[in-house]
Image 1 (spheres, one colour):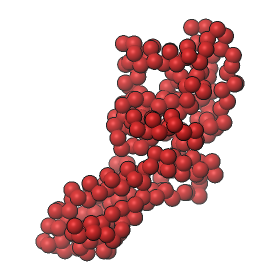
Image 2: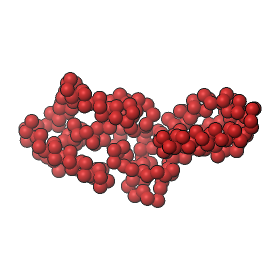
Image 3: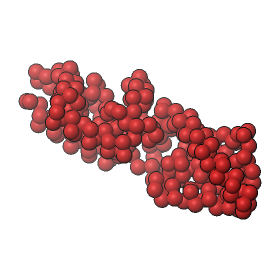
Image 4: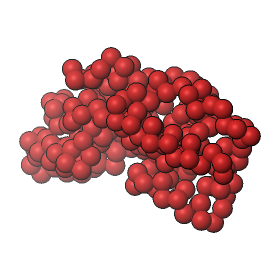
Length: 244
């Protein structure tokens, strides 16, 4: 492929831009012209050499499964495809650059393809330890939950804007709330037993230990945020968990 050296250099440029936080400012025209190649040729390269060929599929699956098999955009659903962080139809030079290929579920991939808003790059955007994800417990019957993003002082204006755009575009608050509903439904009987046998202090202790365990495993996960909020809620620990 005559463009192979250009593709390799572009991949190095992408990596450098990722480290500098400037991927959103990469312009496609910088790498043009492509000689006799067209955008369709680069798309074909991805579809037929990475996705469809036997040797290419090994690398495809390795990238797809690199986030523990989960979508790196919502971090909840299973990854079933790869998302091009910079669209291959707009930035064909990065069609097969590993740093531009993000494990994704079908829903997130479809949502992103239909929008042009700049979102987070899971490989390069570091939101820090935070906590930057907060869960809110609503005193409803049964309890319901909301999640919100909390911008950190260390975030640049660009990073904060893309983090908010990412959170809204992929409807993470809705997805996390659904997961939280199921999680709490699954532990309601356990919390009831702890409350009857020992009291609200045992309920709070269990929830706090769960929060600490989730935080150690995956800081700023919806699970860590949920359990932290539950353990901090006097209403929930004192019997709100039993409201059905």
